[in-house]
Length: 88
Image (cartoon, rainbow, N blue to C red; front, side, top):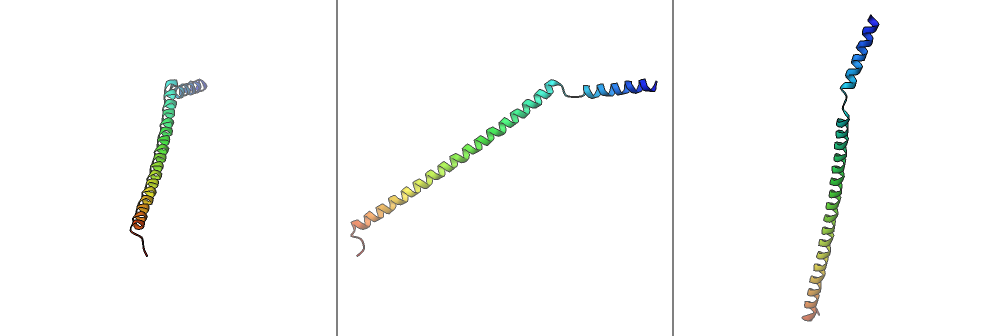
């Protein structure tokens, strides 16, 4: 009698553990959420890299413009000095 009761108890506990597990739909939903999360992180990473590259390009453009402006000012100063006769 004790053996039968033990077997029934073990079977009931086993059935309870199996029944309490996640369903196939829940497992698929978790996997989809995980894939969506990974995709969002990859998109954010790509956006961040693109923004950094754009900032670097803008900085390089600003440096080139500053160098061109500086050269233009130096040329105009030199031309003005040559027009007045320069230093003697």
